[in-house]
Image 1 (cartoon, rainbow, N blue to C red):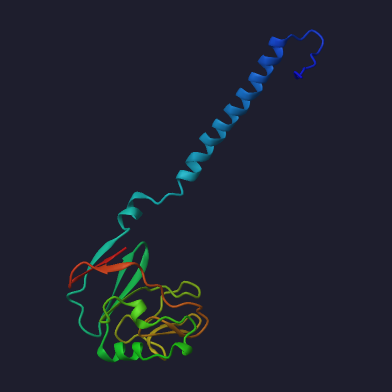
Image 2 (image 1 turned 45 degrees about the horizontal axis):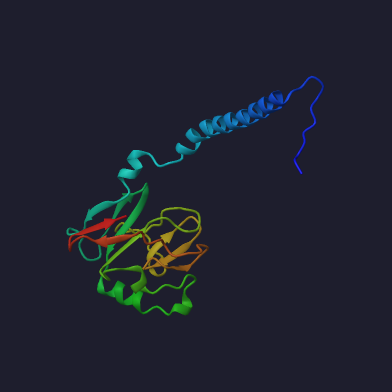
Length: 184
């Protein structure tokens, strides 16, 4: 059975076909127009060229003495690199996992036990913890201390006391050589 269409008074088959075409064309143009307006708004959320240039950095660690720490900037965040002492390494490796809020072994956090690399942003409210400079308060666990709300981190950057819910983040990194770390 063929579908029949009722025509209004004075309408022909060609008028109905033309009206359908105009409706479809109008919707298509509206869709194209919406996409043309939305694309710049979406595209502006992509990272800028200067940010992409900082996607990875190489850090020379050959001049960092044992017990010394440096701070570098990666993706707009401070990254702590510490050349740990034997005492710090032993202390970090001997922690009972049951004592940790966010259990992670020291081996999971470091590639080379002598060098700890982590993002220096407190996981509670985004402050920068103390403990990088000589003379800074290092907290009860000889690591880092966030004075804003009292978060204490150990020598592996793991949260031990205070309101911070997670350990300090370890960024993606690798040793490009014995003297250079590539972060990112």
